[in-house]
Image (cartoon, rainbow, N blue to C red; front, side, top):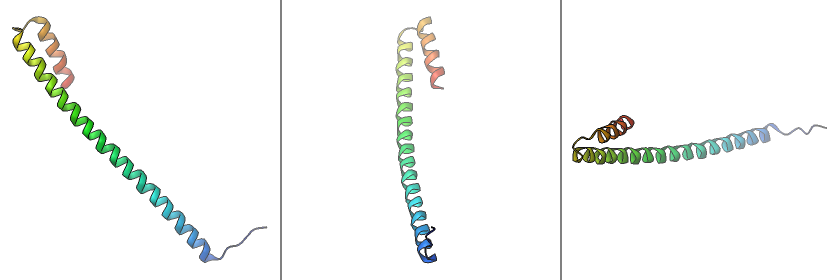
Length: 82
């Protein structure tokens, strides 16, 4: 036996469902935005560390009177950064 609900009750149920879906979407969107901001911060930190490493390697290369090994290491690090 099928239970028939008044049209008004169906509209209220559909509205609540739409609200629930919207709230779920907004929570997931906020979480995605937070994760993206965290990723951007990590990427900036990684780029900063790469620049510091490149400076450090460059100073070692300049102090080592350009030995072939130092030039080789410098070229590897530089290729990874650029």
